[in-house]
Amino acid sequence: MCDTLVAVGKATPNGTVIFGKNSDRPANESQPLVYQPRLSHDDREEETSVRCQNILIPQVKVTYGHIGSKPYWLWGYEHGVNEFGVAIGNLGVFSKEPYETPSDNAGLIGMDLVRLGLERGKNACEATHVITELLEYYGAGYCETPYEAKYHNNYMIADSGEAFVLETAGRYWVARRITDGVYHEGNLYSIETNWDECHPHLISHALEMGWCDSENSFNFAKAYGDYVNHPITGSLTRYRRGKQLLEKHDGRLTPEIMMKILRDHLEGTLVESPWSPGENFYRSICCHESTWGGGQTAASMVVELRRDMPDLLKASCWASMAAPCTSVFFPIYPDRTNIPQKLSFADKTYSKESPWWAFKRLQRHTERNYPVLGSLAKSVWRETESKMMEQRRFAEQKALQLIRIGKEAEAVELLQGFINDCSEETLTMAERLGRLLYETTKAVPPYKDLREEHLNSLNKDAGIEI
Image (tube, rainbow, N blue to C red; front, top):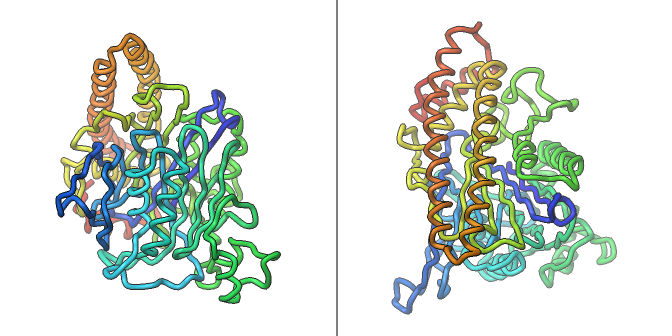
């Protein structure tokens, strides 16, 4: 389960585009950040093709620089942003369209296509067509290891002027262009009869398969979705909740508000948990591990895409690791700055050297007594986040001044220093917060979580000691 949200045009106070994504994955699957610089590929044999998760495809002459958030074992990404300010996120969906072949024989998986769109698209429209053309040619693959994961994919693709909602079923697809307003894309088909582009045989294929009665009555979501074998009850709850929150803030969406939405636990609704968020029987936008199904939020990203800024400042990004409610969003920039190398380190099991596992360990610690420890963690991180937000405004103003007087190299250096300082501060704070949570646990009454045995088992499997 994942959620991707966008605010375009008049939906934000200053006309920027704001993109937000929660990536939900298996409970102990780490998801680090990686940086790839712009690369030129020559005509040598080893440079003419690229190995994606399952297959080799022809390489292009130039792949664009980008930052991606990826499950540790994958080639592709759950979400990311490139040097031109194109942000992409994917979401799993289930369709009636049959799977074509085993993943080791053919097909590009959804995370492949996120990365390929970032590497090859200079704007949202171009990236959308990169994905659809590759999908039509190679088909949709799936993963068989480390566990079998069969699903099709939806995508949100945004730049500083517009966004595209792209929904796919095998090689078939439909896309809707968003130039104003808000949109929430989840683990279900949301495009029904209103779209801008589609596969040339989208409707005729549905008619041949008996999924609709006529061209005039064709409804993409209804025709292609597999609701018998994969009911969308949980996805529909989260989809409507995200839509509700976006519409509530329409006209005044900011990165801070988008972060708040990504941290939502169905507060104030009929299905809010009577206890801690992880003990809810309905999946919220910020997902926690549970014994009754679904994934958990492994990483998040918020990107503000700004049309009237220099390339260096066109995309202002904030990334979070593990559940965003017990973590912190820290700043990154995809154009000519790098991310600290340690942010890219994470593997199958816990390591004290890995920032992702540090934040996952903090989350697991709060789950011991979320009503008390969760509130404490949130308080610490909100103060840290607020401070970094203010520092960002100062750093960007200074960088803009340097660019205007022709000192772009100094502006890059300034932003790189800001990124490095914020990264070190958050990791230092995570270590201190861990000690504070430990001491607090000893000073408050114990809490019995419904998932206690399950969480203990997850910690044992991952090698996490609390």
